[in-house]
Length: 234
Image (cartoon, rainbow, N blue to C red):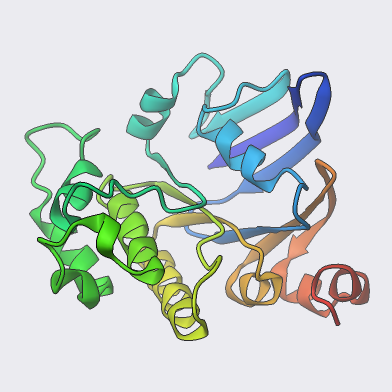
């Protein structure tokens, strides 16, 4: 469904991604783990068209994404939920959610998607008219994911969704990721909580200094001593 081949990205002459190969199949959850500064966020920003690659090819549903701007990539079905949530604080929860459907044709009814998001995150239904900037960090993360789902993604990319959240909220987020995947939405997850990410994923990639240093079935990587020692603190 989504393929990266030999992707390189440079910032001011320094390579942030070095020959990255990655494959994402329809309906699976793929995790990308690695230390801070490994290039994980750059990877998602490159796929979503916010950062231009210097070398390599990114193909989605058989089409090269090279010539597409970020808004067109969204319309093709790749939705990026960035690190830091980036909700619009002076807009209500309702307005933030509805904004997530901006790229869809106007004749499409978003009511079912709106109801689905509130089913996933009942707490948001209690705060629809509240300003997003007044929500807790966990609630803002729920809103950011819900806003992404309003675009009806074929691929939902999540950057550090558990960062800075209380353990109970992290559990909720990962339970929701499982439900999203069960609905057939393909998920690409960048996550600092490597153990939770590997436990939830089908396949996983380890990124370090911009290069893929390991990849395979997530359950196998979770048991790999090198991965556990280097990235799980075990």
